[in-house]
Length: 519
Image (cartoon, rainbow, N blue to C red; front, side, top):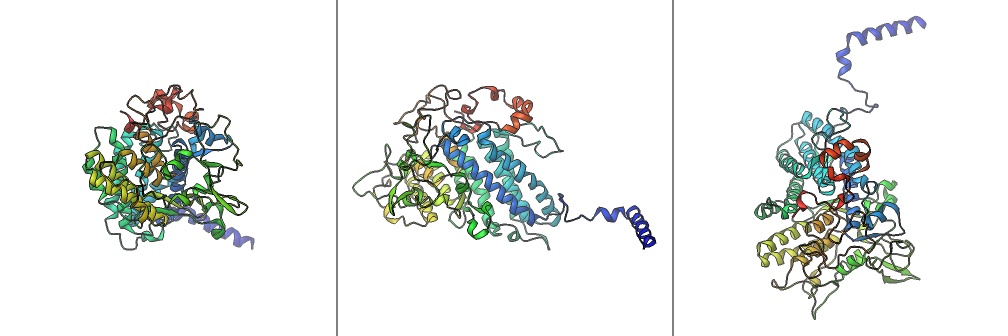
């Protein structure tokens, strides 16, 4: 037996020496590496991790946009409620993208290119553009050119305007590859795509929708092009079925709590603001009123009812004008929990099996309404405004006919204002990062001086909290304009951060507008 073993070792040694090239083309599938997973295996975790970071950015943006209010002085969320936008409070969207999502996209692109899987290559380009554009919106600057290059642990930071230029080109490239045929034997997109089930045309529409969103962000700049926005809208999602909607799964079905919706996970102690309730219930300055008022049919799905001894009553909203810096306990009985329980009906967005609305036809209608309004075409603006409301109602599964015909919705083109349009978009984009983009871009409820102005402001009733963090926002004309630089940049890459923007050292940095938000 010993001689046989020695012979085997000798033969094995010869094989190792003489067949090095043969060994080079084989990978042990049981050991982690970057070359074995095919494109169809790469895409599912990329999608899952992207949605995690994107929707988590939405939760944080919703707090800063005063849709949500943190209860019980609960660490990071409470900091955001008082506009103390610490690095720790906004780390996750950045970490989720760089550490768990984007790092895998280049390898998916390589695998797709090798197999001639053009549709996976196109999807990879769309995801790359989407993720970086979203971070540019939130943080203003992030590593782009040197991200994931050569093991560089201290990449330079690129400004949002540059990232936008790159992302728009990536979207065009993604569309180009999605329109191509795949090579014979390449994995079908349906194998790894559980956002659209392999429907290439819907991915193309999503790419055009992302272009619409980005181009519309430029409304304060000299690059704003209404004609281009409207042209892209025609190629973007027009129906609920074409919208980018991520379906979560209740852990009771999957057996894994990680499949619960992000808004369920993120909103354990958060409560709804009085501002959000006022918008849904049509109770704000300039809200459409008349003899034929009808309550918004979405109200029962968006606003929790408190359950007491079997009886239900609508939750109160947290009033930031009266809330003290001490906060309030999450057990406060008049504020209904966002998660459903024995004491609360919860909300449509915060069930365990909720849908994540990533980009919808409703959003596209509201962008169209805004563009037409800016052009002075109020007839088309009014129609698109109503189409946006209907689209969101349809998505939630409620009948909007009576509401749309009522005096609770603007019926007269001469009455329609940009405020009416944007407040309805605010409702339709609940828990979305786009809500924070919009309230910044439209300057909250302020006039040209930056002061609160109920007459001229767009988001009526959107006030500075009485307990706003005055270190970062010392004057009344300062409002949240960006996320802070994440902890990783501050602790491990500070030289590059400062080189990109010395203003990071200022305590008022989070009041500094990103590139598209500058007047």
